[in-house]
Amino acid sequence: MTSLLILNGPNLNLLGQRQPEIYGRTTLQDIENQCLALAVELSIDIEFRQSNSEGELIDIIHKSRNTHDGMILNAGAYTHTSVALMDAISSAEIPTIELHLSNIHAREDFRHTSYIARVAVGVICGFGAYGYQMAIKAILNHVDK
Ligand code: DQA
Image 1 (tube, rainbow, N blue to C red):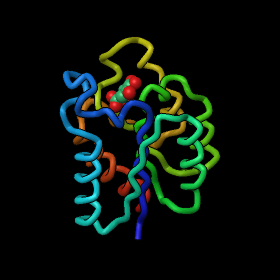
Image 2: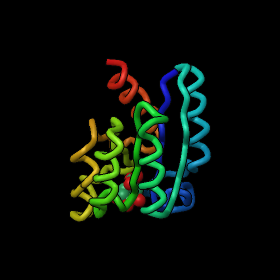
Image 3: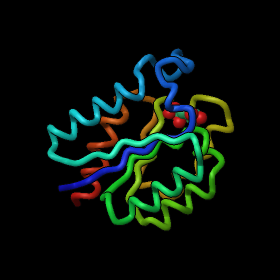
Image 4: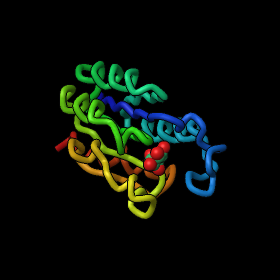
C-alpha cells in the first residue's frame, strides 16, 4: 500500500486561530481529518505530523526514507530560510511536494524564495486547506508513474 508523509512546520499548529484572513478558519486537526478520509477513499496510508522545530522536522524526514513513498511538506517559514531542510529532502531521496495554504508569490518578497522548491517535484500554493487534497492526488500520480 502506498504510504505518504504529510509534514507541517512551524506555527501551523495554530491554524484556525492564526491570521484567519490569510490562512482560513480550518484547523490542522480538520485538515488531518480531511486527509485521512481521502486516504481511506484512495486506499493509501498517511502519517500526518507537525513540529515547530527545524531539527525535529529533519529527523522525521530522515526516517521517511524507508517508510514512505512520498511526502507533502508545508515547511511554513522554514521554506524561505532552511538549507538544512532542503538537504534533508535530498538525503532522504523522497519525492516531495511543497505546499502552502497562501499564495506565497502574492505576499512579501521574502516569501518568494523557497529552498524546498529546488528539490521538490512541484509546488502547490494559494488554495487553502484544499491544497492538501490536491497535493495527495498529485504526489500519488507522481509516485505511481
Ligand atoms: C505558509 C506560508 C509561509 O510563508 C508562512 O511562513 C507560513 C505558512 C502557508 O501555508 O501559506 O507559516 O507556509
